Length: 155
Image (tube, rainbow, N blue to C red; front, side):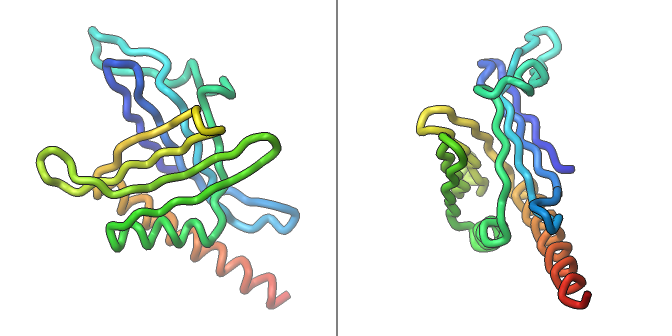
């Protein structure tokens, strides 16, 4: 639903995507984030590709965020603060870091880093407009989750 493609000429860029999905037997709305490392760089066209790494488990990652984490992201954007989370699943541990920083020109921005098993890092920089976009999408998903739960209670 929301995708950010951040290729670079060093071939170290990442693409991050966020979508609303469902989880568990009760099919509650949730947010899934995927990240893919850059696959190639075309110097002539000055663009990068990610599709070659999309299915490589070492060069892509998927994370599901719960409602408390979603609230943490929203709060971080609204207050220009850091948010972090930690997930474990099977044999993998994943740390999530969403941190404010000042760009060289003084503009405010965020750094979004997801690290699997302490060494496999995925990261992008987000302009404030992009961070607000994520925040609004996360608010929408929370609203859908709350509506879903209210409807379930009414049944």
